[in-house]
Length: 395
Image (cartoon, rainbow, N blue to C red; front, top):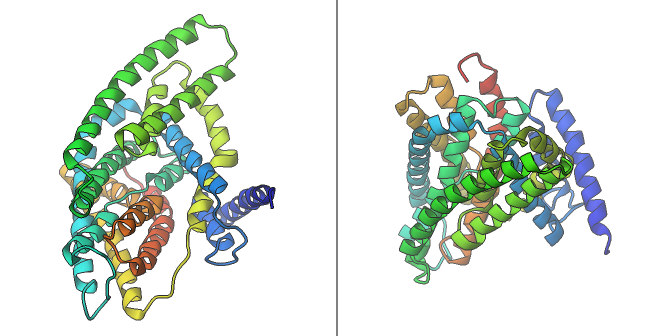
């Protein structure tokens, strides 16, 4: 049916809002309702909606615009102050889950427990499971922090900064492990591209601010054109990051948002782009995560692997990022908030797992446990985040 996508969009928008209202009545973030709506409508349960190229691409635009909005709402001065802290938190928040995932895989991924059909050595397979756990999907956290009004707080900015650095460290880790299984991937070239990218970003942001503010001061065009040009800047930065530097498109979008946040028209632009995100793009993105869930048949050993991996995924992120935050002189409550803000694995872990399966770094039967980790961490993160922000203490 050529017009099927219209029905799919209607069902997604209606169900995400309905479930959002429902979850809010139980004092949970509305994003949890959107995730549950996608899970209910998708192939994992009612099978009313299936992933299509249209929905996948719309969801991708949704997360790009969501991260662009997060960049616009970022307090640049707070982000600068949290820069070193964000790096330390991200570094420890990558190393601890990497070690935790590796140890879990060493125990389960061996003859007599789970028979693997992956092409590489068991050591590389086990390391790759750890690499999957290093991923952080900050989009869920961003939406939750926006909903409770804590995105621009000290801990909120630290979470965003750490998540961006986490993304870069994750790329490096994936590149290193991929190069061991695929000789066509060169570590040195990837690292050089990342360094060049951040030099490029600083130059582009500086020029964009100057040119955009000059255009605003001399132009008498309607305000709506400012929003259009800002959105153009967002999608171009996302495209350049992914296509030419191998950095996630959401990182490019977030940095574009930071650039716009330093212009004279930031308040107006943010108000207009937020409407686009709230009305259409964000619901499709969050529902799409639930739509991806298709659990295969799993033996009891794989079920136990899934349960153990999920618990380790949650604990190692909270502990790793929390330790990093404490080393940077954050309070216990702030450290807990930062750790919980980094729990969600979301679509990032699924993308990494798919890449590893294609390269022969992970057995296909382990995709089920990875999906379980994604579902539980994605739903748990916003619920726990709202609970810890309800406690009195410095933001």
